[in-house]
Length: 544
Image (tube, rainbow, N blue to C red; front, side, top):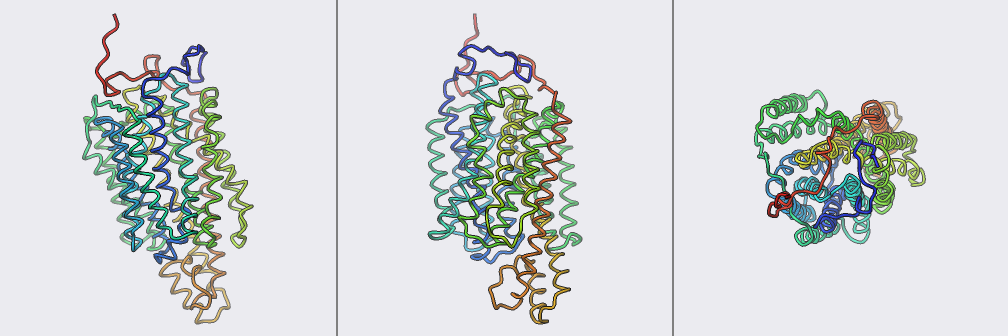
């Protein structure tokens, strides 16, 4: 039988059944680890409203709770990929779960939003180790393309399962006590995952030619942090203020320096030669754009239902079951599709579904607290994500030789997570900027009492329309609540529109740049069982 990428495989009973020793335990531990990492990522989704009430946060501070996590993931994922190759993926994942446990404890005890940022950043560091470590450990023990497709689909499904369960977990604890209890549960989950990793997973590594790239890590981290800082602070501080302009300029300089450093590095953390492969290049670009669309839509949904409509955390969690659940429930189907259908077609179809779902969200009525209008768009986005998240990973890993699997894994995870990081940042920037302008215009044309108008304007200047929207009845400026709600609805509708356009662009790029293109792998480069050395054991004797 010839697969859609041109690799010939036997249809005998061993084609998909043979298991490298350590495969099952490593797969179980990897799936548990990525589940916990994604729980840590998605936990704030249903709690943004409570953070605002309990910690007195405003718009950009809420954005930084999510951004702090994703910035830490993106900045250090490359280096964690190198560390996993050098010292072992099992050790890397175990260390990552320990960091998540520590970060969750800090978040649970946070007296201010600034301390909560620190907890989120520690969680992001842990997840930044767990994402590439678990994926590479997972695929290191696959013998065939079918087995690798299955392993990637299962891993991706548990990633989405964590994101689906996390808001529900947060909502339940918020309902019965405090949002802090959900972080304590995350501490327990991380410790359990660490034990399972150490007990079940088999060590694997690929140290040949891999070294730490300190200049590359420094320039990349500085560039990403500065650019994202400018994007988060721009809506409230002003896009033309000196700190924001300097952040963008210096960030761009550092990122340009990163490219120069990597081109001359002996052992780069980001091997630019990977992009000589067209399939890998296109999958990398659409990974950023498509995942930006997905998490941007998730973040907009969280803000729409939480700080904007002030809905119960349990109700906030329900749409996330539709957004994230399909990727877990459709594991068997996606695994088979990856084997039978060209990944490019799956990617294109998934991005089209995501685009339609996001565009349907632009028609939501911010004054309607019902969840029925979310069902169809959330399901479309969720099914689209289920088709894309596994496909983009499979294309990337199947496009490189096995000795570059660790770097390809780290690169794919980083680019996917860069899209995830950009989602909340850009969505927050678009929504809050648009809402601020709309609220100022609406307030200027209102016939509210002068005292209420002045109070509302002052509060909006300090915390944006989201602060006015949260004023208790009877407080100075609370008469402008309706104007603030309408402005926020307009702002987040535009954010959904941006997400829809991004998903549509990803679909077009995939259709134009990837359909009909087969991964550039010779038979010698097709996935095979790792050597004993890569698995951490003694070299196998040469065949006689």
